[in-house]
Image 1 (cartoon, rainbow, N blue to C red):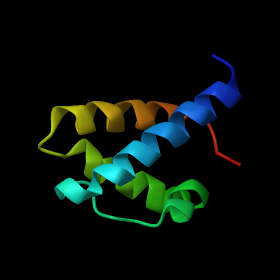
Image 2 (cartoon, rainbow, N blue to C red):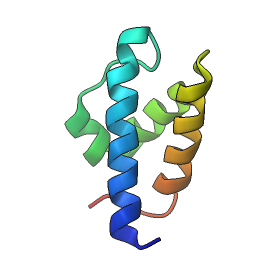
Image 3 (cartoon, helix red, strand yellow):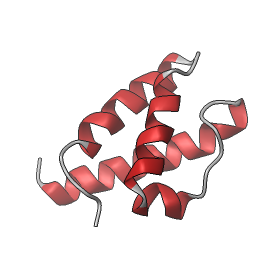
Length: 73
């Protein structure tokens, strides 16, 4: 998978996780911050990884893998 596809997948997952914030997990956060602040993104993904919902935990695990491959910018 090329890097652009990885970035696109990560952005898509982050968007879905952010929209899932209405369920109480993960905590609501500014999407711009998720894309441009690695510390906020890492914390957000970690919080999602501890969600009581398996779909959110699974998405967070994939986001963590993609995020580890390099910066979004």
